Image (cartoon, rainbow, N blue to C red):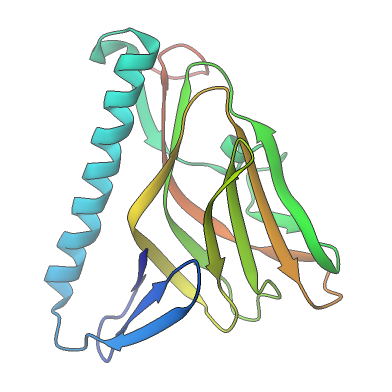
Length: 186
């Protein structure tokens, strides 16, 4: 899985985050336009994938779907902030079942400076789908193979924190597709 840093694109390095290792490859020769187009293409592909999944699983037509950006409450956080409680060692950061008539896709992550987390493990219904080694990284990273969650599946994000720090911010870029009328939406 490849994660692309986003932001100023001069003297930029492409970061690859895989299940086993992280590798950096210089892509300073890439233009800002090419990379912006790549991000938009990934976003469109994820949106299409989620829409098709929802049309099939919800058995509705396109007019009955709402497609919107991921917010912290979609990952079962109480407040509209990307703040997480931590414990020393390995701990569950997110653990909940996605509601009926909701699909979710994650295509990026924001890692703040001085983030104490060294590893993030993402699981879908007990199966590991991603292990991200994020130690020494900060900024916005976008995946070339976003991951999706269907309705009624368990979502578990487990982190490793080798420090005594008790909270951190960690943001996620994603898309939610849900049946129209589940929340206050047009």
